[in-house]
Structure formats: C-alpha cells, structure tokens
Amino acid sequence: MIFTFKSIISEQKAPLDHKIEAAKSAILRGFNSSRSRTALAFSGGKDSTVLWHLIKTSFPDKARNMAVIFGNTGVEFPESLRFARKIGKEWGADNFYEATPERLKHDELKYAAQVQVLKYLIDSRQVGKILKADGKLKTTQTLNRTCPPDMLERFKHEKLIWKAGTIKSYWWCVDQYGYPIFGKAASKLKARRINIDCFLRFSKSASESDKLKQYYNILRKVKFSQACCDVLKKEPSERIQAQLKIDLIFKGLMAAESHTRKVNFATRGYVFESRRNYIDTPFYHCNPLAIWTDDDIWEYIRRYNVPYSPLYDITYDDKDGNECKIKRNGCIGCYTDFGRKNSHMFVLRQTHPGLWKAVMKYGMANEIQKLRTARSQPGLFDEHVAWAIENRQCAFD
Image (cartoon, rainbow, N blue to C red; front, side, top):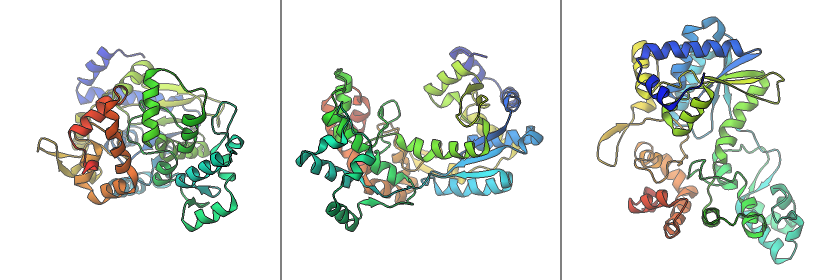
C-alpha cells in the first residue's frame, strides 16, 4: 500500500486504537513474509520498547522465536544501557542479543600518525606508491604499511597506534573518520580521514561545482563524518542478523520523526523488500509504528503500564528557560543537530555534564571551533554555522 503525505497526516490524527490495529496488521504481514527467522531492532528507547511489548502481547506464539538485537554502540546513555539489559533479560531471555562493534584484526596507525607518514612520503617524493592513477589513496592499509621502522617505533612510544584487538569504538571512529557534527545529508563522503586528505590534495576527479567546492573547503578544515552510524550500529546488527539467518526485521521508526522517514513510508509502506547476501530469499523491513507519534507512544505506555528507560524522566532547561524532559534516546557523542536550538549537546551539557565534557575535551570542541570561520563562505552549511555562532554554542566557551 502506497501512502501520500496527506493520507499519512490523516492517519497520524487517528485515535490510538486505530493505530494499534494498523500496527498489528503490519506485524502479522511481517511474520507471514518471513521464511527463516524474524528480529526486532531494539535500542532501549521508548519506541522500540513499545513495539516489543505490542509484538509479544499480540502474537506471543510467533514472537517466541523472534530475536531481539540491541545495538550497544559503546556510547549509550547509562540509563538506557541498564534498562535495555534489564528488559532484555526479563522479556527476551535467550533471544536477546547485544550487538557490539567488531575488534581490529591488526595494528593500525592513529590519524595523527597517518598524517606524519603522508608528509614523509610527500617530502621524500614517494607519495606515488600509495596513490591510484587519479590521485586517490589506494587504501588506508597501503599508507600504514609504508611507515618506516624508525617512525613506527616512535609512534608506539607516543601511543599513536590502535592495537590489534581494540574495539572499533566511537573514539576509534572519530579518530579515523571524524565527528558526527552534521547529519548524513551534509556528511557526503564515507571514507577515512586520511583518504579524504589525499583526495582533496591529489585527486583529479574532484567536482568543480561551487557547492561542492565549498563542501571541500569545509572538509579541509573540519574533521566530520557519519561513518560511526555504520560502524557502531548497522554493521554489528547486520553481523548478528547474518549469524541467525534473519530475513525480516521489525523497527520502531515513525514517519513523524523526520522528512526522510515520512518519504520512505510514503514510498515503501509498512513492509518492504530488500536483499541480504547471506540468504537467497528476500529480506524484509517492517515498520509497524510508522503512523504513530510521540504522544501515541506515551499514551500506550500509560495505558498498558509499559516500563521505559528512566532517561526520559531526566529534566533540563531549554533556551527559553522552560523545564523539559529528554525526548530522544541515542548515542551520547552524536551532534547531527548541530546549529539547532536545544541541540543534543546543549541538553547533554545539563543532564550528563561529565559525558559532555569527555566528548568536547577529546576533540569535538576543536572541530566545532573550526566552523567559526565557515560563515564567510555562504552555501552548504550557512544556516547551521550562522545559528551556532550567534548563539555561542557551548563548545565556544
């Protein structure tokens, strides 16, 4: 079934009982589409908790073999992490799986070391060894392997090496790729920072459009990326999905959360098909709560006495001095709403000052500071940067 924006808005205004029935119908379609095993993507947040409750109470037999995959990124709010593990044990038992980022198989140079190796290769006129014909870096590993033995020993002494067995954590991600300061629409390139450095300096295939030129200029100054979403969330979850031969996953996504999700629901509906290389049959995605809103979630929680993370009871003062409660679960170090009023970091500074300080101290503040020079270059990031400078973001203190 295809929805228009008008019909989505109409559905969103319907009473909760209507939405529950629509969700049940979508859940049943999901179960009936599966030929192998189903899974629920669980974050410890209120939406996926409500969806889990709805599935297990409405379809107890079908849900008995459903895997529940909790994506533990390593930068979860402590309240959400404790709640997810508690409810996972109580509701999921042996069907509850915790997806965590993988570990490094080999030693890797940290970005600061990679920059020094690149400079050495340029100065010694050996940079051609690591570049493709179009000027792009062959691979990050190629550059790492060209590190001279004496430099490698110095890097070991200076702790500029990620050792084999290290978890690909948030800190590894921001070192190798960059900080999640902008959303995915702005963070176009998913490549390691040293690869981007080579691309910007040597590549002959860079675009000549004014908009992309400005984007490249920002990249030269600021280390930002959205790669952490894939490394910390998507890849660990899909690794478990492959192990369990999952062919359908339930998600608590709602069209009301963003324009992108509204468009996706309008074009795909409740259940849509994709492919995974570990199964020959189709892989399905099911979003039973697509027409729900936050108010519906809280009404359901109150009506059925559903437990939820204590994170949502933590308060803060917004920009206008009003007391508010945290609305969204998510990664502590995410700043995709940079430049927006009452942003994630604005809230984190009040609710979890120690965690805020850690994120800022270990690099994000420096990258945000660099954006202060970007306002003189109108274009892609103008709206974000202008608001941030005018309102003196916390990182500028």
